[in-house]
Image 1: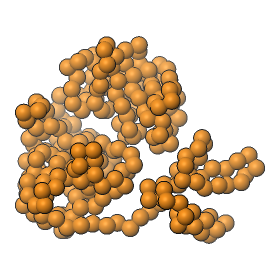
Image 2 (image 1 turned 60 degrees about the vertical axis):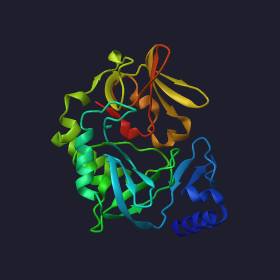
Image 3 (image 1 turned 30 degrees about the vertical axis):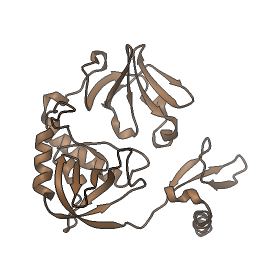
Image 4 (image 1 turned 180 degrees about the horizontal axis):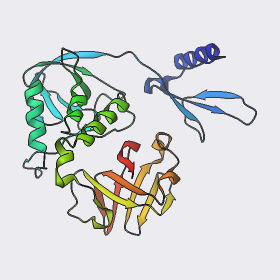
Length: 275
């Protein structure tokens, strides 16, 4: 049966154009009949399909900040799965830990030849390359940045390659209180204290009391002015959202504001920590 299932999945992948996204969906009806599809349906379980790892070699021209660099070709690269604090520029204020992250990355890769490994999406909406960065000795720079506590995990589907390893790296840095995890600026604050001054990546504590679903989002409601929202297309990554209700919860992310209502969009369960 396992061999048959493997052959069936392989056959589907050869015939579904959507398999370029590396995900198909397995569903089973009441009679035990199993079907596979490239289209998600209620109750269907996603199956991630492995793809050959491809890396390309490039020369680094400049490090812009703790998670962004420029290649000799002029292309900008955004490191996948991580978010380092911002540095000061004409567009934004600097954030605590931003210069330390930039200095670390500059020392690690400045002027060196590196290898880029792509995930499901090669570019973002700003036309930056999205990549995991490796040194010639095999060191995974995104991972060691997290291990040093100089950045936080920021996983955005469908780019989830190395997700488990990066989450574990962050947990080690947190436990040892390295980098940003030692700074009072990133100590979790009560969600009730959210304000229009809550800018940049933050950590908040609160208790969700109810769940509201719309066509696009599922929302965990904390009070009439604060919620967190999850794209319904990403729900398969999460446990049942009822798991988070009526329990102390740490929320990690960026606050958006509309009139007097505040919301934090969560893309991956690594940004929600049950206390």
